[in-house]
Image (tube, rainbow, N blue to C red; front, side):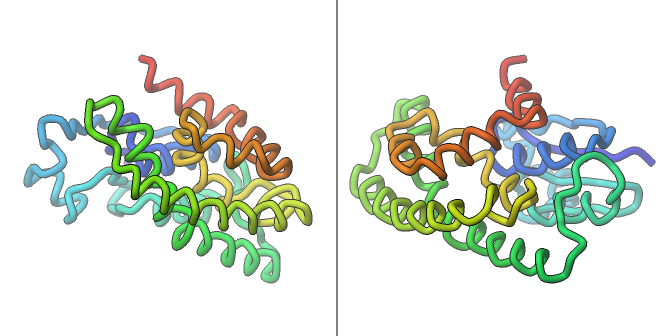
Length: 213
């Protein structure tokens, strides 16, 4: 059975899983889900994702949700396809796991608030909460200081090779580059070089180009 991916173009979580599929050079059927019409809350979609959020994923009789779980499965199920995204060396993989936790538990919660306030709200004509922006900028500054130190030691956060760690950063970083928060990346040369590197990957360029179709 063919792989099916259910998502909404523009969604950070959908983008995260999508770029994983593209990096792995895996053929799949994209099934658009309209959040505007509440399709993600329909009984049919809730059978795929019980929390009613995108994305959802099917590979034969396997159904998954949560973008990071999807990308990990893709790498483990298709290790010889496309880009290798998890190290086979146990110690290097442990380092990737550490920085993967940093992304999920520190970078994501902070950056998604800034994406919402500075990238999404203006497009919807909503009022920006400057208090949230200020607090989140302060937290992101601390995170990026740690990233700068880390990236002085290795080309990517998880080591010398691009991995799921860096891939998972792509959607939020992409949106933040279009906001005033971009200066926080630019002020840190190693972070800036890393962001430029991952955002210019062909797989990511292909995924973001879907927004223009």
